[in-house]
Amino acid sequence: QVQLVESGGGLVQAGGSLRLSCTASERILNFNWMTWYRQAPGKRREEVASIKAGGATDYVDSVKGRFYISTNAAKNTLSLQMNSLKSEDTAVYYCYARWGPDHYWGQGTQVTVSS
Image 1 (tube, helix red, strand yellow):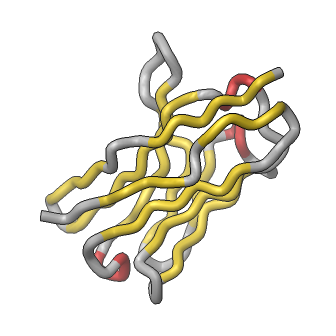
Image 2 (cartoon, rainbow, N blue to C red):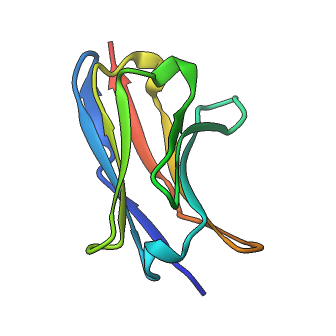
Image 3 (cartoon, one colour):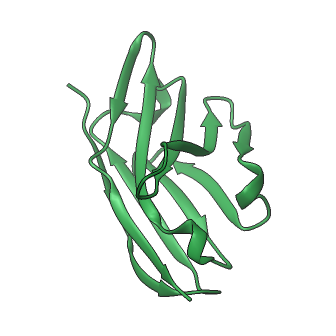
């Protein structure tokens, strides 16, 4: 069973930065793609940023130019660098990995942006 463990969440003022990490128990090079999702209170979970095995990335429009997704194969980690944070970025952020037909989720990490 693959485990994904997020870290790096916390409380930050608007305009500040945070870096989220997701450490996998499996070699991340095995994954087809990895994604950061987020879910704000009362809202549906939304896809924030994805990175495919070949390195191609994709972002939701609301975070383009502010968030950056990356992987470190040596450390088996997925990261999300979040800059110029806004109050609307407040949510629980989840790490997701797809490996063939299987899906894996982390437990989530809270990000709170104060205005």
